[in-house]
Image (tube, rainbow, N blue to C red):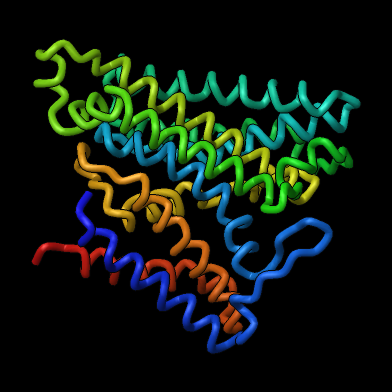
Length: 311
């Protein structure tokens, strides 16, 4: 990934931060209280952690010429399973394992539809996007399931100086970056995304690579769902993870990853996720109605993409 593709996203991020500083002079202030780092920047990182986590998985999916529209529904299923289990008297660790195990199966389902059945990714994942939220509603019986478990709450609102959610997202990002740069996986993903036919002739197991990235994306969505539900101590199947798949795709595109496959940038995805979350925070800060957030996101994304375009 050339530096040029990161220039305008970084400019956009800097512009948003500057606007926030003008509106709120204490925006950049950071403080340490009870061993916890706090401030507006920390809030942006914490609130953006689920989006960043999903965007990491989405980056690899898009790099293989795919798309995953089901991650928001998978996140809702994850939170619904975990909170329903805990509300019924179950242990938090068991709840997490059950939720992630179900998300693993969801990823396998998407991977099989795309890599084996040969269904177009947007259609294959649209099925789970539609049905998945219905499954989450069935699990919660259409109600908001509230829980009060300190161990579970720690995932979304715990601190180790920085929020635990941020540390988890950065650890996954770092692990994937290390894996794709230090092993052949990055080259294989690039090859499959650039020309799957030629990659197959060269001996690359394209179907396995494609199925694997969908499974990984679903697991990322599952962890994000745990973050979202544990942060509010509740599972709301109707709104948890709603439109987060769009935020993740926008973050990936802003970061310079090609929707045509092959070219991808994890560092760009990080910048893109920060742009999306900072934009959301800015809209709230300057008093714009929340229902106008999507319009401002669209304007910023179109502007950044046009500035990135070679012409």
